[in-house]
Image 1 (tube, rainbow, N blue to C red):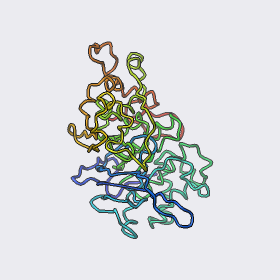
Image 2: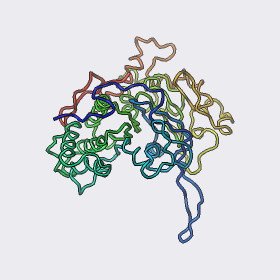
Image 3: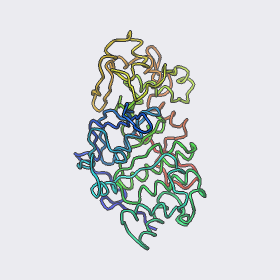
Image 4: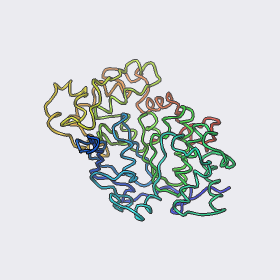
Length: 410
């Protein structure tokens, strides 16, 4: 049984670097109207789910998008796929502006981009068999037919670690991890270039999460896929992402490489998120202090003026509540090569006790030998605590069987 191969790239071939990113969004905004009235509805406001972000994703790259629930992560992914029409800004896919594309133009582009949904049960039609679910995209886009389509469905099921003979079963006959594998097979059906994974493992057990992450990494290596990986679990995102974008209330507040974020976060919100990731070493964990953000997340229909995080920012309180945080909205500026932060006082974060504690680094005056592991090792152990051991390249995952080990990204 052969593994399906993308027409643009042979299996196992490395992704080719390109001067043009596969996906580029500029000033992206996605507002949802708030209306009032029963008979005569009137526009009274907007939910600013995404409020002006710039992001690019290179071919073959995995970009992690993290943040609290309600910050706009899923909306970004759905808008890039043009499931939503943007309120403002531009969405460019492989050099083609698809912001307002419609009809056959949008249909042709959508063949090259797919989505893996969060709920592995609700995203599958309970009235269709696994084979029917996987073959549906081919039917919609007139891709293959007859025996060729049936063989391709069997190949896809085998590729994601399922028995091809399971194609006659219905979703309720599978476990959660197996259902998500069906969703992955469906996403691969049309040879896509981009896959938006919207929290694809949040509804699964920890051991099954590791299998799905291994599967996604293996498929990326075989087919040169590009991922936008949306999640709120930082220990997961570290192990699959090349770069990570941190979102807060519709804005990207920090964008950098995966290792750089865990070793040197420069936005107060990123530091607070990392403080919730445990490090399974008593010597290190004993020095760490959880940063509890005060107050609730402001409403996206009425975000604060200036910096949107200033109402909960621990750094602003330490600096004496400077007026600039309220009067001026920070721009996403590059602090170091490839490390951009949207904070007026990002320089003040570097070297603070909070930053040192959440990264597991030894504090000032603390001997390194007695301080525990290095930041990279601490981050690796944090992943292991969440059920994602860093190890050698994983073999193809089997459905719900032995637990594969996860490759660690540098």
